[in-house]
Image (cartoon, rainbow, N blue to C red; front, side, top):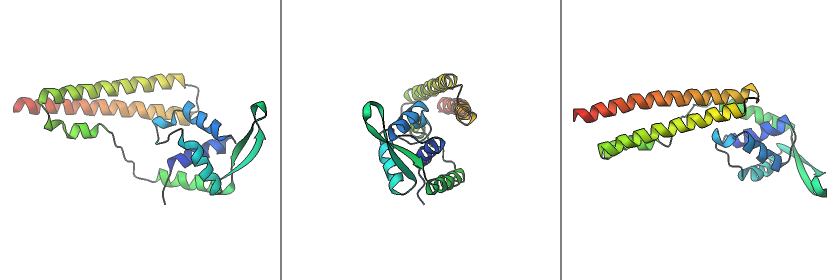
Length: 180
């Protein structure tokens, strides 16, 4: 079975409260879901329609602002069952940590040593910048529920671990260069 984290995000939001596709998009932006999972805000509307076609969401047409009609989506019993299946499946998957910068690390030995070391320092600065942004988000959204706040804690720990790993690698890389 193909497992979609975007399905899980959308179903979870609609399970919490029925809402329009536009409101779901705004909720995704507000909660910065794109930082934690592969979800693009423009794809939300299309995915909502797909979930409705599969019977996981139902819609009611209501009058919106300025007399415009809009569809408000709610989760069906089939949607609740699919949500629970996704939760169970994703929780049981192997955790794959992939970082785009890994391809930079694996190619450092193909470069001039001083340029390679400069890239390691640049990577360190990037991790520190990301860590600072995460801390800013954690402070900005300090009033969200624990299940959201804990993601900021997870990210903080991952950034700290990445910095420790990179510092260790950098020292080894420098020693290896001095030995040559």
